[in-house]
Length: 94
Image (cartoon, rainbow, N blue to C red):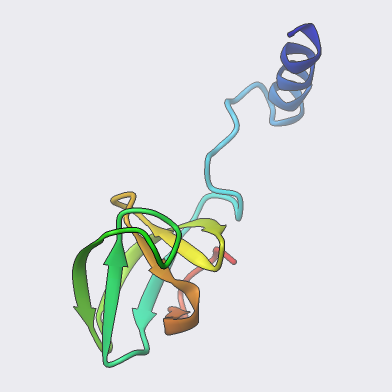
């Protein structure tokens, strides 16, 4: 436990005394554009997760820098396959 707290403290100090951001790519814009005809939006990062909605081609959505199992998290904590989206030209996340 002390090791985890020590690492967190060092990260806090390294970041100028500010809490670390959840955005791995730094603060900025993270948006995706759908490249598939219809994209399934899932409740979790995997093919077996329930489909909660769909998005049409060229739809744009706010996203997070977080990617797991080939799925990118959207800003509302839903997931889309990284294979069928592209970052918008103004996105600063990776």
